[in-house]
Image (cartoon, rainbow, N blue to C red):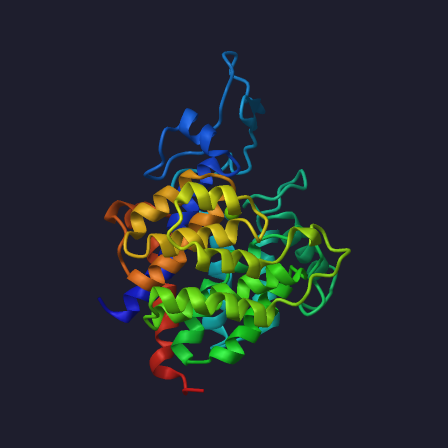
Length: 350
Ligand SMILES: [Mg+2]
């Protein structure tokens, strides 16, 4: 398989994982089991209704929220929307331009604003607060806020990993990943997740083996994850690097054990390490691993998107053909992957 197909599949994988998880985002695994059974394909958003037809907001397992109720099967959410904006900026600017990235990402947000003030797309609160700062004129160096701490830097970073690999701009690329995360997020754990994901994509394209991957990601994380100030939300919940070290030390643990330990909610030290754990566990069975990851629920459009991008980088076009055909914007995503790949030939090696 050609390297170009790995680039294309990285963006396709982000969208495929995103679209697989979208219909059940926020559900617990027991709720997915009860209302869907087992997700293996794109479906419409799952709305649970009582006999009168009203949407249930609670069941015996907990709350039911319908973040993505207005999407249709095969459509992707904010994870891929913002990844596409980043890819388009890198291509249009023929390299890194933070102002342009911020402008394009915030434009994706504003064009989805609804008359009632809500926004269509599944954007998280910290991301929205950062975008609001941009809209009031703050620079993208100062727009980020202390929130969540969420996983958004990691979920949208795959195109930068592709660009880093194509241009061999690794060290500067890691700095750029920090800046992209910082457009919306200031928590050091969130910022570290974006840097680690950019590195992960780039190193998988380079053909890194599983042991080296597991050794490298905690050491990189340590070098970028500063101490979280004590007054930041959930500062007492620990660091991202602790979770990545847990993965290294428990690489063959069962998926259940990993999910019990890491969890899959939208906090950056839950969903991101869970996606990484599943990716390395299913190192040679990516489709099975992605399906299993999504069926653990939680922030599963995002665990799916992160897993899918990593898988595309490592395995290339490994997806079932009907996923490739039916995911939103399939041809466009492949075109963007090809254009990023073309930096390989046209960029001076740095
Ligand atoms: Mg999403």
